Every structure is written in C-alpha cells, then in structure tokens.
Image 1 (cartoon, rainbow, N blue to C red):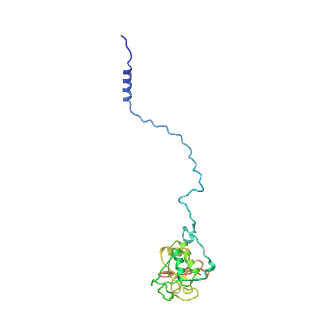
Image 2 (tube, rainbow, N blue to C red):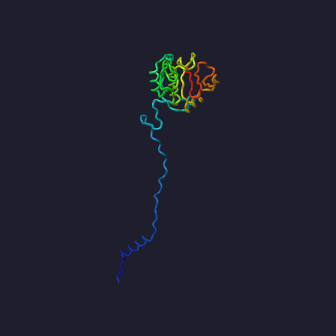
Image 3 (cartoon, rainbow, N blue to C red):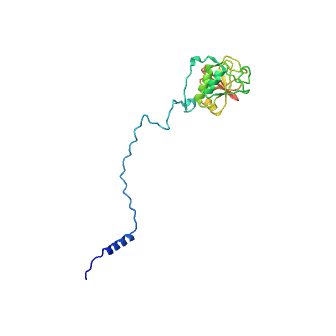
Length: 214
C-alpha cells in the first residue's frame, strides 16, 4: 500500500500547536541612550516671553522694593517756578495722581478746598516722582489753600502738600525715610538725612502726610 504524507494533516497539527501556545508580548528593544541635544541658538530678533522689557527699569530696593517703573525726567532748574491750578491738576492726572478736597472745590481762599494755584513746579514734580518711584496710590488732599501754618517753607509758599494715608504709601515712607523726632504738635517726623536741613520732611498727621519738598 502506498503511504503518502498528508500536508493537510501536518498543517492541522501546526495550527493546533500554535493555538495552544500562550500569547506573549515581546517588547521592542530600548534604543541606546543618546546625549541630550544642545538648545537651539537664540535668535537675536526672536521674542522672549516672561522677560520682556519695554523701556522700563528695576529700581533699587531702597526706594520701594524691586519693581518696574517707567522713568521720566523733568527740568530741575525750573523747580521754583509757580504754576496755575489747571496746569498742575492736569500734570497730576497724567501721572496717575489724584487730588480731592473736603468741599469739592479748588478756591485758594477757602480752607475746605484743595488748591494747587501758585504751587512750585518742583513740589508738584516731586509728588509725581513719588507716585512713579513708590508704585503706591497718591492722593493730594492739601495744597496752597488758606488755613495752613505760615512760614517760608509752607503750604502757602508752594513748598508743601498733604497726601492721604494708605497702607502702601505709609510702608514706603517708613521704610525709605528715617524717624527724626516729634514735632511740636506730636506728629512724628521722617526724612532721609536728619543732618541735612535741605532734606524733604514727612510729618505723620492723623489723616494725611504733611510733606515738605524743598
């Protein structure tokens, strides 16, 4: 009898064997570690986010902590010039400085008004410098109106302004200036250099800072 191998039978056996084997997951071999690629060279014209500076500088911590502020200059040789209320109020507004009065008026002859008439240009600009340098809200509540004490360096002579208390400004003043002494009415006085008679003086009154800008 002629016996021939059956291919079909072998295939059936092979199929059965393959089916009976458990399935195993074969992981691809991990690629060899490669050295990290160097960062791409910076493009001088590319925008750098998170460190963008637009004409601003960081001022020293002595002034009010580290912060950014736009720096502008003014003509110090014109410090003694007197300017009118409208111009002074406009300069304050442009710089983000508010002014207000108890009587909602600007008549220099009335003590319940807040007038900037004939204020010294230097006094006004130093107030604006304070706003820019401290980063704090600044509100003028007293100017050249009647009702203040007389004297050479007085409100009426255009050397002084009253600035409303607020937490930011109070902290700035007591951090930046040194305690000097008590005034006759009990107000604490601060200024940068107690030995310098030309230094600015800050008097801590109950509702405001009485500030002398020489």
